[in-house]
Image 1 (cartoon, helix red, strand yellow):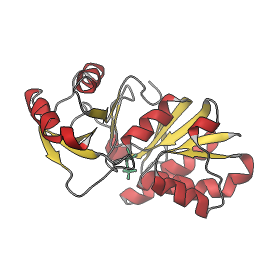
Image 2 (image 1 turned 90 degrees about the vertical axis):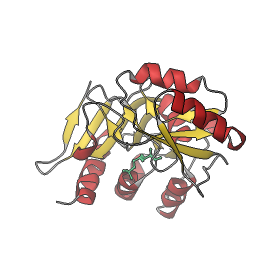
Image 3 (image 1 turned 180 degrees about the horizontal axis):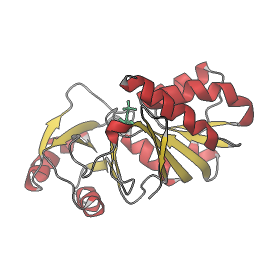
Image 4 (image 1 turned 180 degrees about the vertical axis):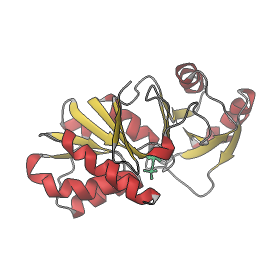
Length: 218
Ligand SMILES: O=C[C@H](O)[C@H](O)[C@H](O)COP(=O)(O)O
C-alpha cells in the first residue's frame, strides 16, 4: 500500500465518528479522502464547517452544505489531518497553510479526530518544518525572533493564506516542550498562529497502516 492508500484508509475509518448535525472538516490530501467518503453518508449530517476555501469547494461539489462557524454552536466533531503527531497527540499542522482556521475549528469542537498515515507518528515533533502564519509587515521581524529561539525560518514565497497572510516554515527545531513553545511563539508580535497544536491536541488519532487502521488515544 502506498502513502495515499494509507491516508484513504484512515479517512474512511473516521466515518465511524460521524453521527449528525454540523461537523468540522479540515484541510489537506488526507481530508480530501475524508470529504469524498463523507459524501456517501451525507444524509446523516446537516452540513459542515470548513477550515479552508479549498475544502469548502470540495464539500459543495459533493452537495454538502457549508456553514459559517459563527452561525453554528459548538461542533461535536472535527476531522483533520496533521503533518506530525507525538504519542500525546500533540500535532504540527499547517503544511497546507490552513493552520489558523484549523486551530479555530479544532478549538470550537468537542472531539478532534486526526487522520494520517502511520509515517506521521513521531517521538519528538519538529522533523517537519513548523509553519507559522504571520502578518506580512512582520515577516522579517518574526523571522529574526524565530532565529533567537534556535530555528531556521524559511519564507514560503509566493504563498498567501486564506486570511491574506504569509507563512514561515521553521526548520531545525526539536520540540521537546510543545506547550511551552506554542505559547512562546504566540507572544511574538505579528504572529497570527503557530502550527503547534498542544493546548488543543487531537482526542483520537487514526493511523492508516499496512495492518489496517490503528486508533490511538492519549
Ligand atoms: O494546512 C494543512 C493541514 O494542517 C493539513 O492537515 C496537514 O498539512 C496534513 O496534510 P496532508 O493530509 O496533505 O498530509
